[in-house]
Length: 506
Image (cartoon, rainbow, N blue to C red; front, side, top):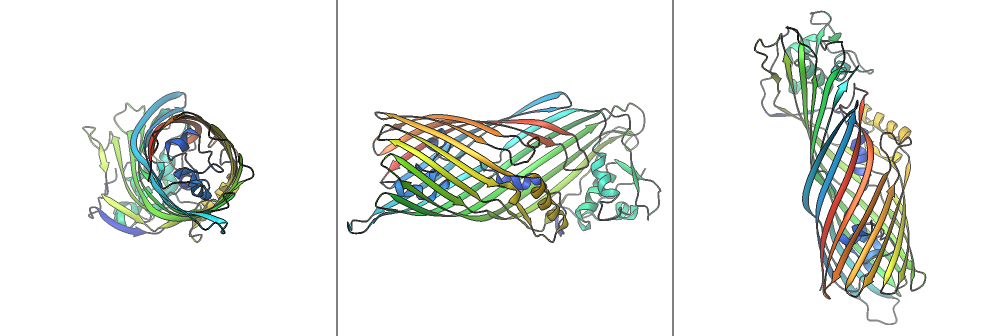
């Protein structure tokens, strides 16, 4: 058996070229919108494009801040509950995650023009922060795969990708981990986990075969834990003309911080005195960075009751960075006579070059009908072309292949949001519905999203307290590993969120 070559550098951060396993999910993570914001906004499923008058509504249509009549501040606290159930080769698993977070805080300042000869009678400025995505999540998948092993992932790199040949045995025997490319590192991890061996034990060998038993029925597990957020800070300005036409502009700064830890386990029905018993492959990816976007919008009062809105949200231009740590653990009868785990942990943080993601733009048309001070009903219809999701630099072959995948497999998706509110004395009762099409042309990879919401509010005069409940459900395929294993589990993600907001006029 080969030796394990341990690199001498500990916790050494090195810079390598692109080639980390960025997947289409990285782009969709930032391209897909999530329903968030204040309790009133969430209770009506975000159908606020022609309603305005709520700090979260300016994210749908920036003109909404010009419908405020007073200075106002709102802060919101949300309880996030995510239930992930998966099915993998007939085995069902369920994992739950809970989190409590201040997900929204902002204020709007209204300045009225007392000059009666001017049609521009109001201008408003708003500053609002929202946690667009709470990344805290975890899910667990397991099952018995009758045919395919994760050895395909490591052999894919060791035997050579289509664009290059295999890796020399001399590199795998004598390299320093931090000096290798990402491709070589993945092969190095598999080699030191005894997943494969060279066909010939010579340094110029570039062909390898698996040590995994060929009898199939591989017990596979994936446990993923994510923590972090994707936040947006919005600066808004809006004005109104004769209280009939409202126009607004948002400038948005985006912040993201995500730690994603994936542990993959594969066990073999091997009771012999030699060979592999099991393999574990752990990867921790830390992604951080920021971005910028803008949006413009208008709301028109056709009558005192009927309102129409139109808004455009630009792409978000993200600049992201990835830091990766990995290790393998093997149980091998030939490696340790006492069956102790053989751990290969390079203790290296790989810092990759930064890359860019451009999310697609969004166009929203809105309708609202206001029944005086008693009730309202609102409908938003939005369109977004997910095939325009783009990775850069285009000079990187892997990122350009992702762009081609996006163009070929993603599509324009529609979203409809419907909300209503009824007021009785100081009480408000709200409800909503939302439907979002899959971003894929064929929705097996990710299905449509359906959501429902409801809530109540109580007006104290100079302040208001609101509470909302929102439910959403979406099915999708989940790959146990990024490549080399074509079998996916079917994941059903159910979100149950409760939001409490306090609003005060000043």
